[in-house]
Every structure is written in C-alpha cells, then in structure tokens.
Amino acid sequence: MEKKKIMIVDDDARNIFALKATLKAKGFECISCSAATEALDILRTDAPVDAVLIDMMMPEMDGYEAIPLIKDLDNRHSVPVIAVTAQAMVGDREKCLDAGANDYISKPIDVDKLLKILNGI
View 1: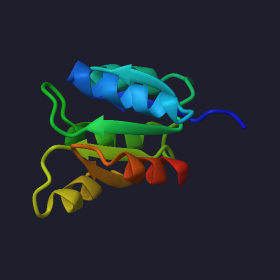
View 2 (view 1 turned 120 degrees about the vertical axis):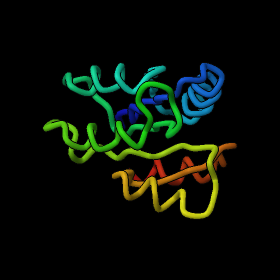
View 3 (view 1 turned 90 degrees about the vertical axis):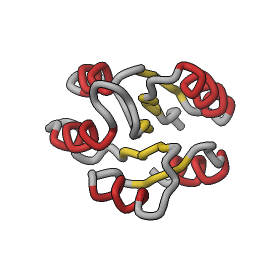
View 4 (view 1 turned 180 degrees about the vertical axis):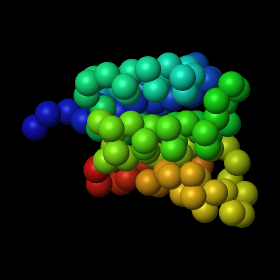
C-alpha cells in the first residue's frame, strides 16, 4: 500500500517538526510549508497530496482565507483539508468547517484523534 502524503502548513517550525516526526513514525509521508501562499503554489501543481493540515492563525494569509482557495483549485476539490488551531473556543470548530475545512483538530494535537482522521481519508 502506498503511503499517504500529508501537507503540513504552519508558520511555526516547531509545530511542523513535531507533526512531521509523529506522522512519519506512523507511516505517512510529509511535505511542509511555512506559509499558505507557498502551499497554494505547490497545490497548483500535480504534486501528490492526500490531505492538508493547515494552521488557521498565520500571518499574511490565514487558514480561513486559504481553505476556500485550496478548495477552488481544479485539481484539489476532493483533497481533505483539516484545520489545526490553538483557538479551541466555542464556535471555532464551526467557523473552520464554514471556511471549507473537512475536519478540525485543536492544539495541543491529540495524536490518536489526528490518526483517526487521517486514516479515514
């Protein structure tokens, strides 16, 4: 079985490092971007990406702005986008889903919950 390729989009290198290490240990391939604009540039290509984990609070372009742009890409309509946020307040999950996210996970990330989401794609 081919490994699923996960794109991690986060402006904090520590978060990228931790997520990559965790996901690689669980058999996923990872690519990472420190900005949503960089992620969009990659997603406009034919690079294989099975899911996108995107931080919702980033400078320049946040996840709320980036998710609809990702979903509008002709070659990425069906790619699951999982919102990742430290803003675990009432209504944040709904706000992320309203922006077009397929699922939502809060920081600190519950690895078992994340794996359940990713194994479902």
